[in-house]
Amino acid sequence: MSVNLNVQEKEQYLNELIDLLKIPSVSADSSYTEDVHNAAKWVANALKHAGAENVTVEPTKGYPIVYADKIISDDLPTVLVYGHYDVQPPDPIDLWDSPPFEPVIKKTKIHPEGAVFARGACDDKGQMYMHIKAFQWMIENDKLCCNVKFMIEGEEEVGSDNLEDFIRHHTDRLSCDVILISDTGMISNQQPSITTGLRGLSYMEVTVTGPNRDLHSGLYGGAVANPINILSQMIAQLQDENNRITIPGFYEKVVEVSNEERAEMAKAPFDLNEYIESIDLADVHGEEGYSTSERQSIRPTLDVNGIWGGYTGEGAKTVIASEAHAKISMRLVPNQDWEEVGRLFEAYFKSLAPKSVRVDVISHHGGEPYVTPIDNIGYQAAHKAYTTSFGVEPFPERGGGSIPIVPLFEKVLGVKSVLMGFGLDSDAIHSPNEHFGLFNFYKGIETLPLFYENYAALFKG
Ligand code: BES
Ligand code: MN
Ligand code: MN
Image (cartoon, rainbow, N blue to C red; front, top):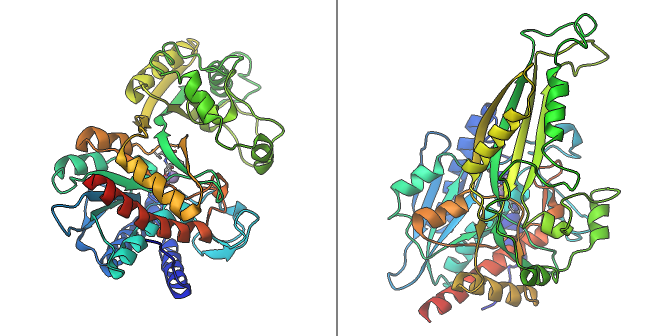
């Protein structure tokens, strides 16, 4: 089988995606609530139009989950497609070259055929929509060879709080042989890769409180603890001079990757200069003893995502703030446990505080890390699909990001996920000017039916 979309199909599918990208389905910001619900309805309609059955918009305590399926035979394997229709907030909005919810097509150096610029273009509307169109293509061309179920959620960007409950209550409805997800990336358009791991996440927020009100920094300065100074000192102590995390017990459960596997990983093409240039850096930075690709995939990290307090308005104001705050996330690797790491963080962070301040720590959300072996038929079906459609073999690649629901799928449903991502690191997900290459969008739609074909054949044995 070979899938070649014709010009009309390409134009049609792109216009549909543009329509979806116009809906500002930002799950983190309640002022977009109606839009998030509208995106769910839009996806449900698209699934109906594509030929899916039993399409439902399932309410949750938060945003709905769109379910649909097409069951053609008990003898065939069942593929569960997961994706998300919610997007990250577009901020900082001033740094966008065009409005985030008014999609435009522009050519770039990496995407000479053009890319669609909009929030969610790559993460994950564009990638999720490839699955709906690939499904439609298989139906229209009489090539559907697996049962298919879709579960598209609207809370991925805020931690998928209600999804675990949903899958626990619908284990029968969601029963499947493999889970297929396009919500990651690949090395380049010339060199595809398959994501074989995701990092876990433990997301904390800390508050340091000093005096009961903001104080004049002349009258009180020097004699009371300044919460912002203290917070900065505490954060500075979380990493040592080798950029290793100092939290006692943090590395205890970390599975060290063998030198053999590290050597294997080092064979994947990675150009450090290109990397440095692409984000305008003078040099890279990270844990001693590990390469840049290792630092962003097989090693755990700790990052401050935001820090605030005191006066940040125009001009100068002399003040000692009453409170200082920071949001701190840790990326985790096998076999770290996100709740345990959160507890270790809290105990250590509080131990760093002088008596002159109070420290409060809360945990926002988290998720476990995930790795998938490459000897299962899901991986092999994906490998063969990329090889056919790109003409080169894909590399296995451990990813640095997190999709907390993937390890939960394994725990609750007992099913492994195959991560067929078509985005590029340079697509600026979560950043201003997010985009998705048209080549990538169409290539994804053309590659996915090959996965189904290969999977059905391997499943039969
Ligand atoms: N699609 C991303 C995760 C991703 C991107 C994994 C690229 C690998 C490569 C997902 O939407 C995401 O942003 N996840 C969050 C975690 C979530 C709990 C908010 C992340 O990784 O920060
Ligand atoms: Mn995503
Ligand atoms: Mn995301």
